[in-house]
Amino acid sequence: MKQKHIPGIGTVNFIKRRRGKYVNISVQPSSPVCVSLPYYVSYQYAEDVLLEKLNWVRSKIEKVKQTESKLTNFFFETDFKTKYHQLVIKTFEEENVKAVIAKGVIEVFIPKEKSISDEGIQDFIRKVIIEAYRIEAKHILPNRVKELALKHGIEFNSVYIKNMKSQWGSCSGRKNINLNLHLMRLPEEFIDYIILHELTHIDEMNHSTRFWKLLESRVPNARLIDKKMKDYSISYW
Image (tube, rainbow, N blue to C red; front, side):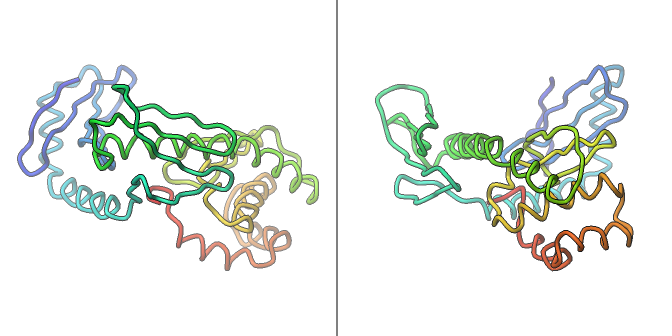
């Protein structure tokens, strides 16, 4: 990996990928701009590609900043709950942050000499909460898929829980259902909608008129829920 400061962007990580085929630019919250490039491509060429897309990158950085401004900030007095866990933040005498998820509690321990508002600390807290969502999702979602599939006479293969960045769920040609762990942040009605949306793709692998008619036979207010889903974001909460 190579790091370089690019005026107007800041620190950029250039990372070579042995299996890469193209130069790809990624702008993510709380991270430097990342440029991945095939192993045989020079760093200079990748930088030239980046500079050609400078306006686009700046635009993406601005959008990411807007997203970051919507992120929840966690403090000692923050009252934050998942469906089945309560967040508790404490200080302790050790040097490194740590966390324990057990018995319905997410305990985060922060060294006394560190500030809870530090970006790294906030990122750690969010990652621990995401892990709690993963635990909940693995406990709840596969069983709910089985229940809804049985109710509607749908045969599927397996259920996988993932931390997806842009999809609430997906269905593969092998009848595997992939569900985003962030579904645990949604009302139960919306969770069922996403599950049945993906199960319906087993019968119709597109979003045709036939697909929507079939889905609406299983979820009468499917289109309304689909519109309301736009009020929820995967990337910030």
